[in-house]
Length: 187
Image (cartoon, rainbow, N blue to C red; front, side, top):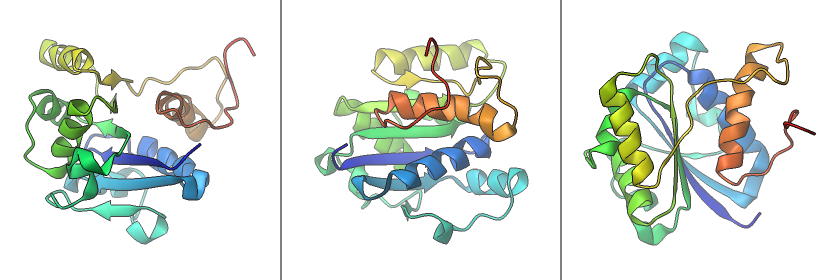
């Protein structure tokens, strides 16, 4: 793997464990990967409700504030190749779908799409209404990948982390980040 640049946006829906497990796996990749992290205010609140205290110092990534339009990935010239939004609320998904660039997360998603780079969105909400589905269709037509936080059970996961990893490992695969997975169909 060559030096990859990834934006990780953590939205304000429930499902902080998906972001935590993803960050843990990204951190293991090490110096071959540059990761810029954005967290909404609700993302931090939900993390603390669902997981416990959150401290940026616990992670080897650069964190950016939601209005820091000087962040490198606010421009396509910085050549960030992938953006993952995990978890993604339907409100955030709708703002990205509408092309709003009213904060750094929506601006970064807009940049990734306009540059024809990889945008992976992990919605964590159920059920979907017609507006949600139309927004997902619009983003898919624009080149995004919608990967709902829907775990699989082929591998017979036994813990919450193992269940979560069935989604996180799929996201890592979609991002082209090759990791050792514990289960692959047919192997």
